[in-house]
Image (cartoon, rainbow over all chains, first blue to last red; front, side, top):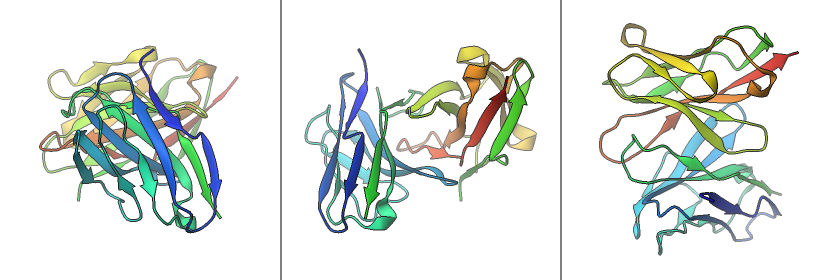
Length: 114
Length: 114
């Protein structure tokens, strides 16, 4: 089944403890992206990747890192999480880098930073 | 700055009634426009998209949207709402040039009364 898989689904951590949220897609998609969703703010893009080893900042990249060492995986790294990074995170992918291609979304990761 | 505005935070309709969700955009040129739906606890799913041509576009689940350049709008409609349509709806836009960056509106939550 074609899908975008995020793990974990829920995560509670403490301030400053490094964490990684994994994202994997099995559709050989070129484009991958991370969003955070906050009440009343909709979805905001954190980082995106056009292909392997090609990443770029979205609208809210501060406090996050990403890597794209292989096509299927696009992990989101929080080196020193803070409470303002408590949010619902979504990974998404699309076949190509053109806007005509629809985004496929993962089921989300609910992160709480205490 | 490029932006997408959804004026209604929450809308409640009766089952069987018609529905219109509003979306306005602010872009230099006509952007690519999308509507996504998010069911509770799920990721986002593409309902429909507009790039050019016929200003009335049909999507999945019986939804349609109309692009109106003069009003900078891309409103989503459904003639008869079903209880399963209760969800949050996001309008999104992309400039279509250069890298693929999608700007989302803040969302409209739809409640359906039996």
